[in-house]
Length: 348
Image (cartoon, rainbow, N blue to C red):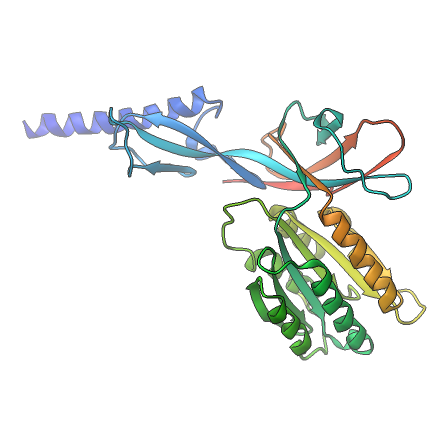
């Protein structure tokens, strides 16, 4: 009797695993549940299977708390989906607020995307803002102006109770002066207190840390993640490199807007770094020679953040690593599309 019960139990467990594999195949998963792929943004797919015992698989969550009347349970699996924010402007730089989904074409590694899963106008999404201040010695002469334009940005863009932001400063150390909050007064106080040792500059490490560590909490509603970096873009002390920072920002869907204060007329080596960082994440890079020009940059930034679009789509190939992206808008007239240049896919 005991041996028969043991054999029956083993066969039942194996059958549960087989049902899971079958559910994955029938839903388009294409095979083993252990070979799932995770991308920038994950939607949720639901599969039904007979009551446990069931062997756990990576990427699948069993929800036994609410079985149906016939004893079925719900299984959830990550379905790959990529999200992309973008703006469209005319040849004079005026933002276009009425782009239609039918006018959009997306190329994933030069392969046309055959179906757009989601399309939204993002005119009023809550902002999640990271403000990074360079307090290294190379920015010492611009420190007063740097804090002034940062305060102007907070007062102009952040909406109390709706948006949330944090403040970090970096030199040869990285310091968080204010964790994420919706209180503008706390953010202003953090900017005023920001200082630190700055013989070297851990620029890449600071931006990487902000991308990875400061937005850990799951959001139940759509939000727009933005990072504003005021720096000369020079680095001489980081463990990370520029490609690490770009990958971290793309994986977390963070747009980076960079501002350099050129108080003296000469070439800044970090401008190219800041430009690439902005281009690859769908943000912008701006050079200001005075506070008035910086204020104009933040005015344009505020308008842009309220006139964006969002699309999501299934990747055309389940290939891990970097995927190049191109987005086109088919409409009369000469239009300029601004979006990030790619995304990273990871094997789970």
